[in-house]
Image (cartoon, rainbow, N blue to C red; front, side, top):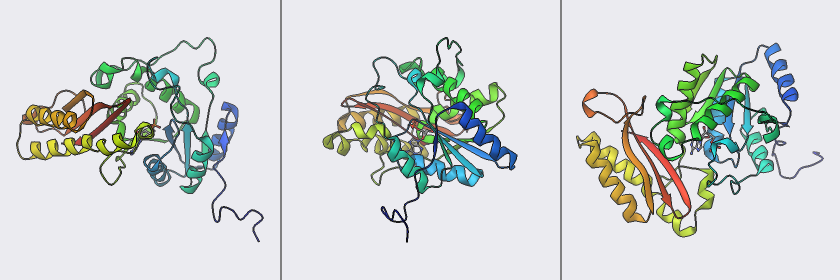
Length: 292
Ligand code: AMP
């Protein structure tokens, strides 16, 4: 009989390593066995969207490492760093359920020791949209991702399309800096009503949660209108009106872009388009995007 039968059939939480030495020892052992390694960078408070990334990682490689690090340098002083949800024990149990092999949870002191003075500053895809509203955000993201790539040395790194611009920026960084890994994007996991899963959804009140799917609904309506030949500018203006009418307080952007460069979409150019939006609902800033 199992000595600890409760909870039934639950695997033990995925093992966490907290020092660079322990991480590198484990990775070197796998490398010695000829195994392929995937990395899934996260900030924790994991939900079904993150777990899909891990499942994809396990299909792309033999071992999946999940990093959990709430990266202070990608938050502006007025943003939600202090209240960002944290639940390492819960995360490690969830990760065990999808077969993650190792959790890398460095401290801020390990990532940014005293005297740390180097930043990766992406331009190009990092400049518009989030780059305008969160000017230091993508330097924080690109820097921490480069560090994570150097620490884990993965063959593959998995990122969600939920943060579509982030995925574009990381692809650009990997290309520009000749990083020796493949960046893989994974589709956005949503609630039944269309709301994209996000750790920040936990901030929404019951009333706001009812309003929140209006953002995705408006994007879908705009994409359908553009597919029928509507001008992207009119379609996105109508979508913005619908989002505000539903109860959002303010929109940072709701726009049709070239999916590769994030430059404004030229409908005649015959290139893949993407609708991207960021909007405020109460104290919570939600982002979403879909193909158009
Ligand atoms: P975060 O912990 O929010 O920094 O996200 C870690 C990774 O999970 C990023 O690559 C996100 O794009 C991805 N992610 C977050 N939410 C979702 C979702 N709803 N569906 C798919 N991927 C997601």
